[in-house]
Image (cartoon, rainbow, N blue to C red; front, side, top):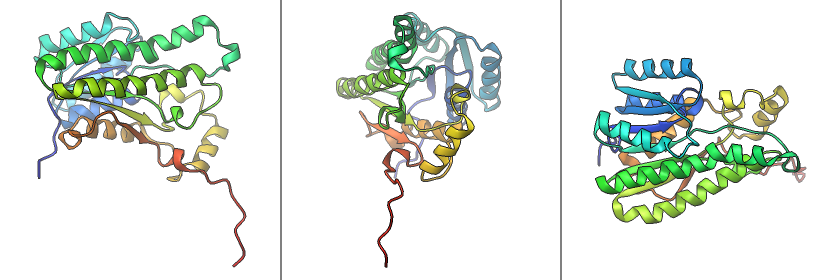
Length: 262
């Protein structure tokens, strides 16, 4: 039996200042990874995650950058190679949420959301693949969402982006396989994060508690642990897969049918 460990010591993660990105950066640091990350505007959160990584005994370089900018992925790759010498793990995570009916979604709304939520994943995946092909190893993990399986009204642009990421993930997995590079998606279900703070009203929380078989919304750390698994040697033969981490939500079709009498 092979000892489970990270596939390599150096990781790049987008959107590390809060939420799942921050939790994943810290979890990877505890598992032995140095982190190069980016954040768009939350400087206080970025400083805090850097402290958390360093408290775990690893090194961190956190840059201010927009993951939806075509140049950001190259900046992150160069920084990781210069500082740590390799890019073993690349996690595309940066995203934002927009809750709006499609008929009310403007062109600027649509393209603005897709910039970070889809285009940034393309930029990051392409750059990561280029680096990892040269190395002859690595893993790319794209954070998607269970919402692309169990569709939710008023999330048209967001779900379109997440569905597109699944297609990107599967295609790149086939292309990257011969280079000893795995590519997977991680689909969180309902998760308590700053991204969802406004959208998760008390009514929404009550519905999730009823619909999720495990009867609760996930903590960020529970999604981060799944990311660490995909970045480990335990997942070395998994590629092109979307790992759904949702407490059983998407499989639950229960609507309360009346039972037959005994």
